[in-house]
Image (cartoon, rainbow, N blue to C red; front, side, top):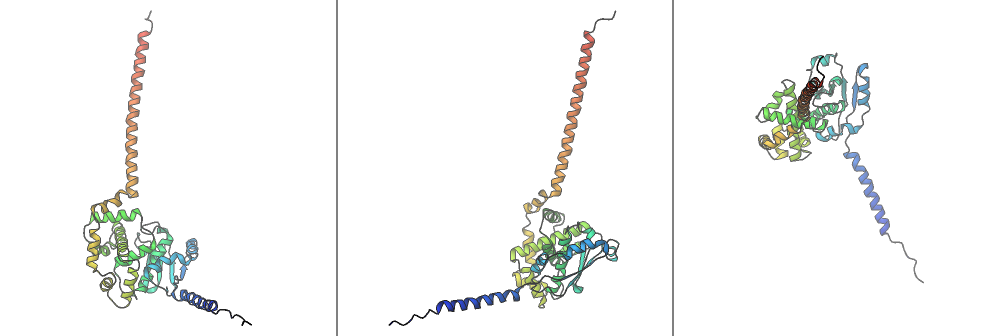
Length: 315
């Protein structure tokens, strides 16, 4: 008589192993997940609509700010103050300022009436820009950061580059051939056109940093600054090049074609060209109309002379 067969234990062992692995994998996201910053929006009654828009944002709206600063935990809530043009904040800020951040106080002040201005052109991009300043300050442990780096990261989080940004970079290069890092901070203290050029240059320099040295380069620099390194040393440790060498390499890439291509593709130049073509067309039309009227006058005169010659002589 044959002994009854015993079921193989291998399938059971595989099931147990798979279950343990699944439980381990499910536990990982909880430890590695990032959390979007909590926003406490404050606004006067006349800005209730804008406040409702910001309160209704999902965590994905601020994901770029978390991404570029490298924070896994956003930290304490950020107070977002929406200020009208008659407010004390608006009166104290230059007209070109559409918002600002106080990183050490975790406060962001936005002026909704100014959001159409450069560089953000929208309430949500403006919010991301200013929140990034707060998060960058936290990621750096409150230690100082160069203005170009801080603003460049905030611009990267705020919105994508467009032809206007590239045109401003090209114009800034043509207007001043000094290396950019030496003049960006000073430009932020200048007039509107200087500030716009400074924003565009800061964004372009940080774009170069992230493209050449990896998307995590900015966050890695912030982490080393938070650990106590000065910014130039942190930059060298992350990128393998000094700030001076990076800046020189960046500037060398601005060839003649690199400088002029953004200008010829600029929407400003495009519409300016269209306007000039329209003026030329109007002038050509005016010349044609004058010639046509002259021809008509000549034909009318010829008909009048013909009629006069063919009429019967007076009695």
